[in-house]
Amino acid sequence: MSIEEKFRGRRSSEPYQRMNKESPPAIRTELPGPKARALLARDAEVVSPSYPREHPFVMSHGRGVEVWDVDGNRFLDFAAGIAVCSTGHSHPQVVQAIKNAADEFLHISPDFSHERQIALGEKINALSPMGEPVLSFFCQSGTEAVEGALKLARYVSGRSRFIGFLGGFHGRTMGSLAFTASKCTQQQGFATMPGVTHVPFPNPYRPLFAGDDQGQAVLNYIENVLFVSNLPASEVAAILVEPIQCEGGYIVPPDGFLAGLRQLCDRHGILLILDEVQSGVGRSGKMFACQHWNVQPDIMTLAKGLGSGLPIGLVVAKKTIMQQWKPGAHANTYGGNPLCCAAALVTLDLIEREYAANAEKVGAHFMKRLRELQSQYPVIGEIRGKGLMIGMELVSDRASRAPCTASCHAVITNAFHRGLILLSCGQSTVRFMPPLMVSVAQVDEAMTLLEAALLEALAQ
Image 1 (cartoon, rainbow, N blue to C red):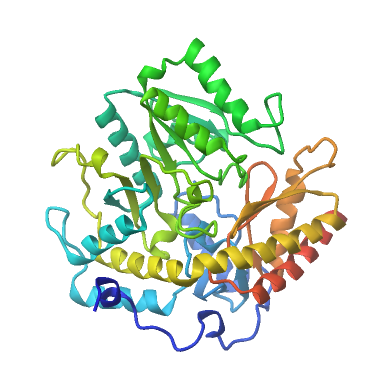
Image 2 (cartoon, rainbow, N blue to C red):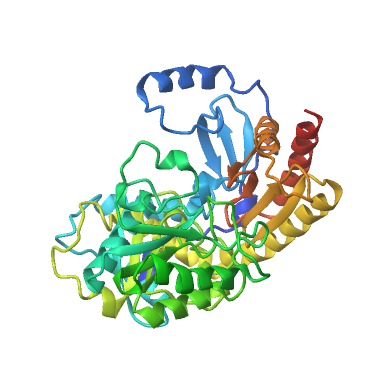
C-alpha cells in the first residue's frame, strides 16, 4: 500500500455530487431568518467588526456544493469559502482521513517529524511545480506562506526590495499587506513593510498602456522605465505575482506575460514568486495556474483549496534555494499539523485524479452559459477566467467600459436571497468559484438563479 493510499480516506461508492438526497436549494424564511438574526446579534457583541460579512448567512452544515443555514434555508455555494472548499463541503474521503489522523495524535511541534507531513512534501515534489526537486515549508494560511516566501527571497538573494502588482492580493499581515493592492482600505491606517514597488497588472479589458499587448507593455515599463529611473534591478530580491489576478478582478494576463516575466527575472538575477494561493490546486483546470503558460517559478505559495477547508499553507521552493535556510532561520508552531496534512493528501489525490479535469470541463460549460447571458444583457462587459475561476464584469455601458459597482452589488445580494452564494472582486466583477466537483446540472441551476438576480438588479 502506497503512502497516498494509506492516508487516503475510504472511497465513496457513488459520485459525491449525488450523495445528497435532499431537495434542491430553497429559501424557506426571510433572510436572515429568526435563528440567524439571533446569532448575528450575538456575533456583533463579541466578534471583531473588521470581518466584511458579505451576507447575513449563519451556516448550519454543508454537503458538496450545497449549504444550509440555521433556519433550514438551502443555498448553492459558488463562493466555496473563498475558493477554499475545493472538494466540496465535508467530502467523505477528506472527513475520514481527518478522523483517522485525529485518532492517532492532534499535534507534534516542528521540532519533530511525522509521516503525513513527509508524505505531503513528497507529493508536492512529485507534482513538480518547478520542473526540478522542491522543498516545502509548512504553515497555516496564504498570508503566512507569502511571508515565508518573502523572507526566503531576502535570505538567499541578499537583496531587500521587491516588485508587486496593482490589483494584487497576497494577505493581510504586515509583509504580505505591503503587496496587497486590490483595495486601498486594506492598507489604510497601517504602516506596511517598506521596499515594495507596485506596477500595473496587464489587463487587456482595461489597458493602461499604449499598444495591443498589455503584457509586453508592462514588461517594457519594468525594464526600460522602472529599472532605469527608480528601482535598481540589482537590489530587487523577487517579483511577487498571481498567475491569474484574483481579488483584483479575476484577470487573466495576456499569453506571453508570465514567460516574459520569467525571462526578465533570469536576466537580472531576480527570484520569481508565484502566488497560487487562490489559483492553485486545480482551481484553473490545471494543478497550478502557471501550467497554462508552462512557466516555472523559483518559489510558489499555496493555501486555500489545499486542505479542503482545513488551515494549511505551503511555501514551495526549488531545493537549491530552500536548502540554503539554516536550522532556525524560519519556523512556526503549528506547521505540518497532522490533520491538515491528512486533508491535503486526500485533496491533492482527488484533484489530480478527477476534480482538475472536472474544473476544466464544467468551467468551459459555465463560461459558455455566461457568454450566452452576456449576449442578451449589455451590462455584462466581459466574461473571463480559466477552469472554475470565472469573472463576470458588469459595466455602465460597453463603449466606455465604466465599472458598474451598484449593479454588481445588487446582483450578488439578489442572488443570495434566491439561494445562490456569490462574492465580488475588482471594482464590479461577480466571481464564480464553486467547489471543483460541481456538476453541469448545478451550474445550470445557478445560471437560472443568476439571471433572475440580474433581471431584478436591472429593474432596480
